[in-house]
Length: 519
Image (cartoon, rainbow, N blue to C red; front, side, top):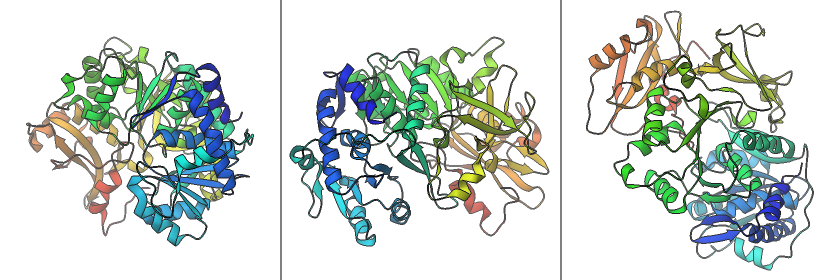
């Protein structure tokens, strides 16, 4: 499958439908279908062919959408860069990919100039921002206007389309290689479980450098829908966009849903157009999803569990399984069942398959798995074994095939020989009416090796004491799981670009000068 057929499908079936709406620009699929081959022609003139890399360091935009398809059209491979990374981290990614062309916007002019000065193989900077083109860069719109359309290079199948760089908190980032075949299969999988694919419009808050943003870019294009790129997550901007443009779909992590529901202007906006909200990326507290279902009754919620390496998803908790009462209400705490085309199982340390309701590592097999980590065969071999992706997540699976994610194995707290999964404690803390955000980590303990520590952000205008939280937790979980210490913060918890709590940032200061006893 050629990745460019995502675009040609949209052009053929929805030529006059709005394809992109961004910064006052509205373009149809017919217009985008004319612009992409011209941009591809410009890339070919800059030496992009045979899998040579193009990189981008920019916020989401309509031009970024076009670039995703122009790179393979020209015969290249794409390496979108993380907008929250330092110069040093992006130096690593550009050194790894040897990208010769770097697209940049208003937010990253200085960094782009520094990257080009430091890396001899970065030959060309292309300006894809707003306003006049800076000196020393080529202008995106000028390239599109003045270049002859290029015939499609025909990259397909196992040819590399894009590298998504992931990780980097404890070691060098890893470039997840996704082929045209893998992304096509993943896209078909997404479209298969969406409740409908007619007249879709999507508001993006996850950056296109992350699979949470890029996956929707692909399946919305295949369906001939409308892309509404937002530069970043802002509760008011998201609510304004949904109301003004009658947006139908979005992907939001639990932190974002929490911020929407608790915003003081929440009730001022009509959010009823949104038909499908996909959430994932971090644990969804039961209290939060129950509140969301009550306050947003027209939204159909779907939880996705997966990672970039698994094509973005492995299991789905469908809307029909979001039950708050009855014998199947337990499923609300699950991550759903294996999605179409995915095999998911729990394995024990000896490699055998775990019986139902037995804790082990979650592993996934499908035709949408990554091809491996770019230039890193050792890391690839560590996680891809006999066709199975070893996720590093611990969990159980019940007799009906519903997956229950316990924690990242590395985030498990070993206290006095007992394993404590932070997700379980966080879910209980979120049930307290005064708790807005909560993160549970392990901190050094002379007596127990590690002890359970909770970082709490109270709701606006509310307060809560350690004694109150202690009593609350003891009513729901065993005593060894109850936090031994608490930390209260007024500011939000630190998060990744897609809204996951950065537990390493919370944990590392406590472990300075210590050695953790678990991986």
